[in-house]
Length: 137
Image 1: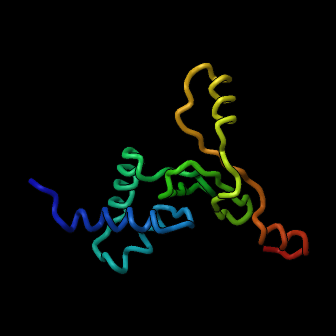
Image 2: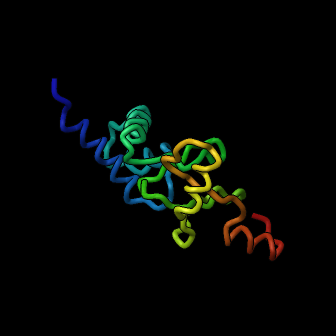
Image 3: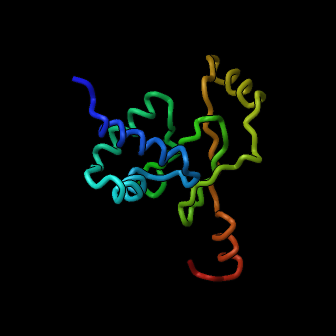
């Protein structure tokens, strides 16, 4: 039996939501964003499709932040920054992962490096400025 158009509508909407976001959303935030447009959307559908997309290489898991997995629809190699205070996840396009890093990792592991996910952690600009000014967040 062929999948229904409604099934693909949900799958396509979940993928589109991820690929159009720079916020690195969680499954819960994708669900909350899509639920008004797709009233019969279930959390299980979101999770199943996210796992499928990860297996297919269409999306990647960036990290678990405050116990919640965050996703990225941009699978091109790039660097992330996670704020340890507010949990924001941002792309650092100015920081490049070059061939030197891959070569060093390949030499260190003695095998073959196939991918790299580089993530920095610390305080984002807003949290850092609040801390420096003595504000409480």
